[in-house]
Image 1 (cartoon, helix red, strand yellow):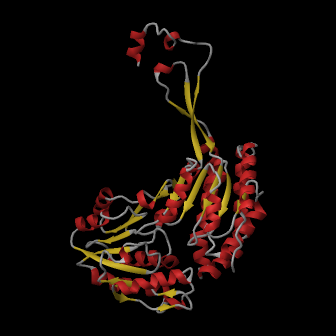
Image 2 (spheres, one colour; image 1 turned 180 degrees about the horizontal axis):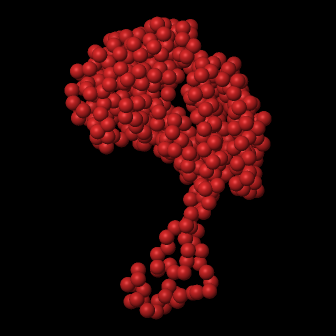
Image 3 (cartoon, helix red, strand yellow; image 1 turned 90 degrees about the horizontal axis):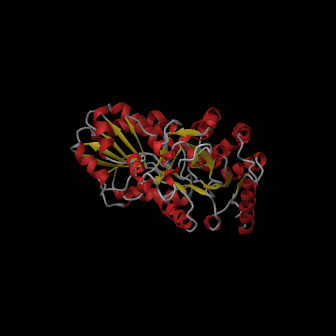
Length: 460
């Protein structure tokens, strides 16, 4: 299946219509926002089967994995917003200094306006609709751009959105990078982009033309440290799960392993056992093992196998775009597999002798989207204190994305801005300060010619 590009004239008409709809004030009321959130929740439930079938068609993603990593996360986000929206929308009082007497201060959250949300292909439902929840909650309109690399999912999403919302409020645009260029030539009040750092720079350059705020959820090489005192079996199981989830095509997948030299062999053996427990003797036959999204991705990730010694795994099947979970040893730190985000089930292994060495290795590279440490909590907190990453887990992988009560986002090369829960509401809102001053009292001190200036100076 190949999606048709949305014409530029159609894009301009959609954006213009949404701006007019937003200016009408229709999105401002709490009742409207809550109703739209409920509509999205009901639509997801109605479209659960078509969306899961499309995810299988495009990515070989099982129903269980599709529901757990895509639909359930969005449904949980919607419920969280419905539960707390009233409190988030409520004006908040702020302290007012004596020098401003008799004024009172507060902040109100107002929607930024027209949003553009561009999503990638690896979690095409979650990464398009989760930001949309924040846009609806904040009172914005939204233009949605799913990925052309998962055409069945993108078409299902387009139909679901068209069936659920007025296009003047929320509308889907389809197509390739030319369509991205056409989209970015329009003016929005916020752009929310999830994808690679290189495309993130393109989005940021376009946004800079109109000083449009951006949220960039990017990627990077997320390190996974296994220290000498780690529980090897538990670490191997949780790391194997995190690396083989979606066949490693996850922005927060552990990208490379930093193993203490004393446990490197034991870990490799435990990792192989963990993969077998997760996917059977032959992962290619597993219903839960995802494929590379396209031939280009397959060839790129397969090419990494030539940049080290295959310690385990290594089998591939081009016809199915299948790559077996692979541990790769004897890797040079300047090799492509250690410079580029892998986004696949190939796992380079680097050994270290001291935790300081591992920390130094991480700090000499771009800040990652996630960092994982296996070992004692005390040492893990020390590693986190001495490094920087978008998020982190101690003795686990991936799971920080599952808690809607903590922010998710990158830092430095891995992105800017946060979302999930209240952070999603805030991402699409402007926190506006409002000073209310009564007219019954009008102190003369601030007016020229500044009488009693000595007293005013002391108060200030």
